[in-house]
Image (cartoon, rainbow, N blue to C red):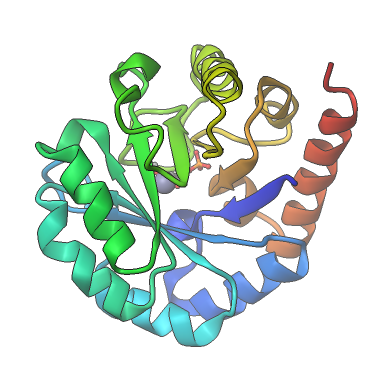
Length: 224
Ligand code: DX5
Ligand code: ZN
């Protein structure tokens, strides 16, 4: 039920295939790929060619988190490169409903993302069309930032709204998820855990992934 989605942002890009394999051996079941354009966020990362190479390196679903302006222009290219899931920011999409349908038209799971300052309520009209909602628990752009505790209320609210409206989106959280924060994130209701620094920042990705998943699973058992 809980899935770990290591973010390759903190991986060694010269050894991506090996690092992703190691995280998968530790129980990771989704690979989170951060796409940044230097406009929507103050950092630049990768584009479709790297997604295409990753596609050949793993069978796990590729979760492309698009932190870019004009997502409509690039969604077909990421789909063609092998993305399985694609999420777009509420703050970056002028026609959010259209963009989410564009993702679905490429047979990808469609996710919507909200920044720390964006309320859950701003998603009320798209919650019935998304496959997942991604709550940013840091301001997007960089790995290894500190977890923002206010995101816990947003995760809880999304779980409540889902139950009340009978919807079935999944809840993903991204930013500062590590051994010291994972339990509260899971208890709040997050089901897909993105972790960059905690998996790839130091040590062995396999061990790191295994420990994080273990802590997450234990927290589910304590969930009230
Ligand atoms: C931040 C990215 C995250 C980032 C998380 O903009 O969206 O996916 O890699 O990194 P950690 O887990 O190190 O906070
Ligand atoms: Zn991300």
